[in-house]
Image (cartoon, rainbow, N blue to C red; front, side, top):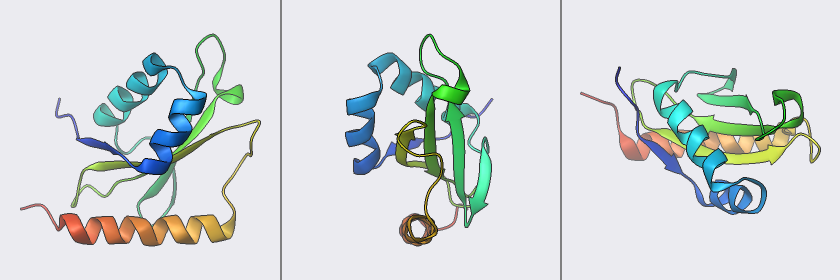
Length: 112
């Protein structure tokens, strides 16, 4: 099985450091490296994955937002939030993150 490279963006790193254990963060990275198309497609290559907290279920866990397009690669872990913080991104946040993803994809270029 081919694993995809996962790049943690600064907002994700900051939020993960405050909310996740190191083991949870590494488990998420391993999961996304093996399953980059996981989660609900939000549009423009942006995906939302529900990720369980240690000792808890997915419903009370984290929501992670990543950007991935197979023709571009790698996986960009953009941000995350706890469900008790908010349940979904606003339309403005989604628009911004899709634009960010497009910029990242343009910088990476298409795979050969």
